[in-house]
Length: 358
Image (cartoon, rainbow, N blue to C red; front, side, top):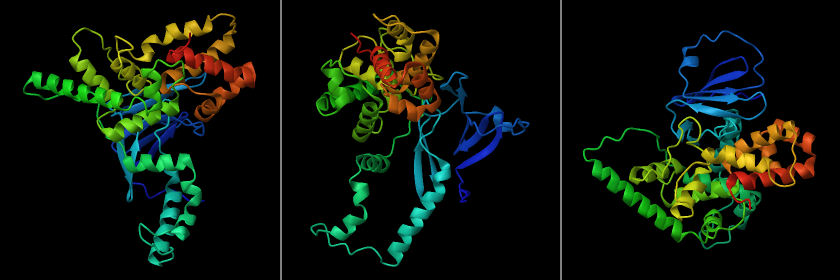
């Protein structure tokens, strides 16, 4: 067994009562862990100094509470830098135990370079076939290529709710106006070549999925690293004089990926108010439950409401994606609906929550 014991920016501080207390760089997170079956005393002072706490519901799913935690931050492992962000299904985007695999890969690559085992590089105009064959499986895998691009690009870290220390208030407003003007020009410039933008701009009756939203966020950040959803929302709020921009709840919806849908709809003047989907959640879920020719029992409603909580955070999902987010919830749905009906119900629910149902 290999142990990932070379970390400096990550540590498991303590475990008790089904939860794991962790340090990720300068921040302390508390997350559920089903392997923690003991109830030992919680003596470490950091149990009471949390920056983020993920609460698992007894019925499946859960939600974060945040305490002075930035939307994204970075930690290091040796020469590697990782950008972290809490997701609605409790993960941070990094699995520290994989450090042993990174070490193994790094050693293999370093040894190959030191011993000159790599095929000769023939220049930019050469065929370099021997080198290409070494990575053929990687470069032919779209998901792997997308991940490499994402890692290369990195993310701009923006700390929410940091008080602005400005000598002149008008300067702050003028800066926000300029920011929003540039942002909206960017949206219009790319409205035909980014799928989520095209769907919203053309009012297409098509679901905007988690994958589309991640693609939109990544591309916006590649154009300007300040184009984080929270930062965009904050600038819209700064120039709003008519009460059209709702405040984001710091403990619940500040990191929701679906905020991008609402921002783009507002920018394209599809909506005259900028409101998080959380504010529309109950109404839209009740519309789904009460839709024509649609009868659900209490257990089915309970399961679909948990799934709706994922959708309102991350965008439309399908049965396969739900299985990757929350296998227990996926199994419950398969059991009470049957696989084909369950897949259809998730699609219908997504339409209502995201707002494309007729």
